[in-house]
Image (cartoon, rainbow, N blue to C red; front, side, top):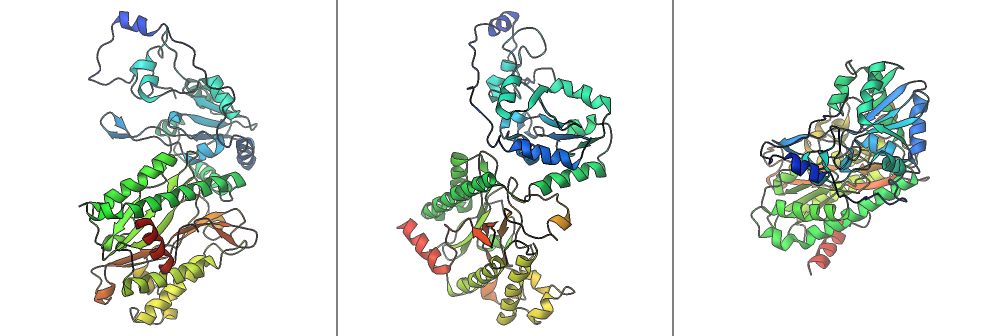
Length: 482
């Protein structure tokens, strides 16, 4: 594997004369990074790499940051390094395109990087700094050189061009985090196999329990997200007057996310009225009706790439109608029941089961279910799920659906441990065209989602600064809109 040594220039770029090229290669002052700069969390990454190496003794492990992806023509999507790469190196910036972490068979870590290109001179990289639209410093910003990258991370560094020779050797046994970097997938010369899947699973499982620093980062993301929800409520009067009020609110929250962190941890869901019955509504192109509800599912991603994931369902007019209140109270009761199960040693699935029992009993009491709650909950039935399709929560961390490659026995069928961070998010999605529902219930969608960390004797509600009960929400909205 080698980097592309031709400048990535556009078809509409102006030609460069020899005279200009010579001139561009002279007269530049040294601009080193500060000597005390370190990657965030760099003190934790050696232990993480050691745990990963210990899981595969005597093997070479390759964890790429990933490559740019084209959005349109010569414009790329904003780059975010793969979460496993960020967790092992502490490097989280957009300058990590194409970089690769290798853990050698003896446990030594080596970072293969595209270093800062020279300002002129011989060789294929001499004009990159001002001519290459994808990697040039004048186009996309500065990268560290090899010595600076080693200073930032404490990891030995090598030029990315040297990786090809390493891969060609074929020894020792090698595992790749496949599907992240297409160039690496091809260069390895074999299809992804079970050994690669085992590496992906282990990387997820090692991240299931968060250390104290990670919990602090997640709390920071929750706090910024709380501010974003407050911004949205303050923006309601303007958004209600706009033809695409959902997008106005999306932009409001996303402004907070970019101002305080790296951006959003996932596409913001701003779902008004019946749009709230679409679980992942991200079109956000609808108007707002003050008589309807707004489902806002959003999270700020910190600069260290940890994300919150919070949902609130709010009355756009400031107060819940009686039927909206009834639906909301049922979902809140389900969430309360789910949260009450959280403690070390509890099955991961317990909180979902507890919440769904409350939902099924409520639906049966309303007469929506034509069978008893007990019958609807039976594993051979599940009829209640017509109105609440998805699971009630997931792990949270560097990914909004964190540790997704973990084996079922360690995650979905596993038990909770102190330091795990997860969401609890029951919901009811009463479709507007569902003829099994009375008319007054159709088109109401409610989800309440909070972020919690498992403690020694239970769980701490990280997102408790945002109100959850009907009176508290109405008071909170009233104070922000006063």
